[in-house]
Length: 168
Image 1 (cartoon, rainbow, N blue to C red):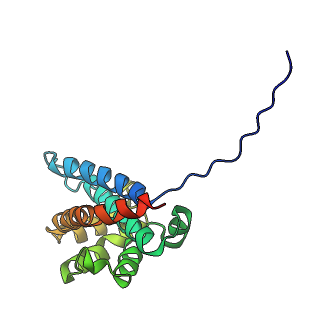
Image 2 (tube, helix red, strand yellow):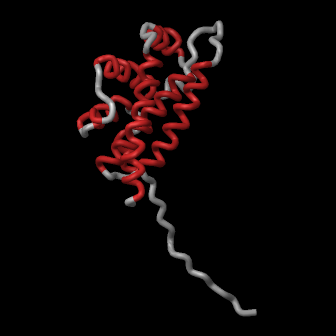
Image 3 (cartoon, helix red, strand yellow):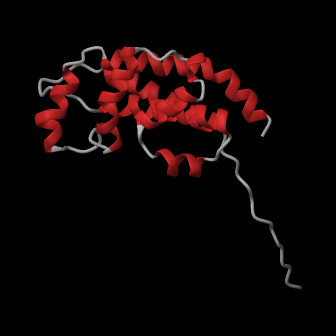
């Protein structure tokens, strides 16, 4: 039997803004579930914060993909997990058409951004126990604000992202 050699060209996988959006929606859904869990006596639960922030990050990255047309790796390298940087850049690029910046939204994103960027919601952290959680608890509307923002982004960006993703 003769040897047969097949040469397969490298595959190109295109990650679109819809891919960011799909994960953003799943993180938001998980955050809603986590936030609805009965409150424990031990106090602060970082899980809903982590999930809502992850959803917000990916919604903003989907928007940046939409307006700048840059790839996942470039977006990741340029912004990392910096919600404030993502929010500011998105606003500078016209995000206000889809989700209006309000003083409350700006303040809430400024508050959670450093904790999220440093992954403080993922790991037990002594600084968070004594300082961070106290700061976050002072803002009872924080979770509601980010929840509403991510839902608004989900609804308002869906159609433009689908259209742009299909043209890829």
